[in-house]
Amino acid sequence: MLLPPAIKEKATSMNGVSSPSHYVLYIFSPWLFTAELPDGRGIPRIIGELNRDHLRDDYNEVYQIAQDHTKQLRGAEVEITHLQDGKVERYRLIEDFTKHTYWRFDANECKKYTMTNRTLHRCVPPNSRFVESTFLGDEQLAIDRWEYERNDEKKGFESISYTRGGCVPVENHFRGERINPDDKTTEGSAYSGFFANFRKGIADPARYFTLPANCEK
Image 1 (cartoon, rainbow, N blue to C red):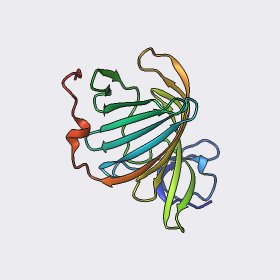
Image 2 (image 1 turned 120 degrees about the vertical axis):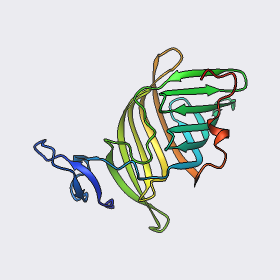
Image 3 (image 1 turned 180 degrees about the horizontal axis):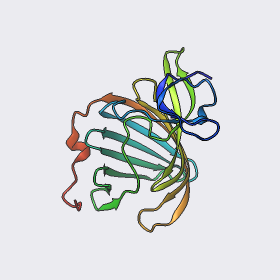
Image 4 (image 1 turned 90 degrees about the vertical axis):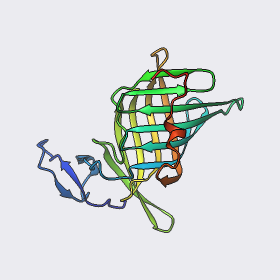
């Protein structure tokens, strides 16, 4: 296993006493540490594609996604393909993390929902645990994978990989449960996804962050 770079973090000793923040290398078990990556890491505005397979429900999602970490906004054009019958659904999604609100809409209707315990992070979420480092290509691009526990509209464990230093997302995986926003029922959820074609900056923010007239603000 490759060692990740030294980062500022709060270490917990074997007897459970927290030590002051300091720079360390993962020489021992990485599960002893809680990452505290500063908010300044990562790219303020980024655009790209998220392709996600839902393993339990047999469907695929493709997000054309834009994230503005400065304004705490995320917008996406989403296409869902049901693998059993080939049925395709399309909708748009806007998430405003400062208002703890998100909207899901298409040409016919718009639904407004309340977020629970969510923040749009530029890089590794707080309280993540380092899992492993790998390379893409012939040791050309170092990737660090982290795992954290979710307790929002999803409850379970999510892992996410970033390029080392640049904090560009590469892939993510989730296992646990999700709460249906319409009827509040709970169901099992597991997905695996990868990110592609990401670029710095958002050339057309109105395309991703403007609500249509039929949406309640």
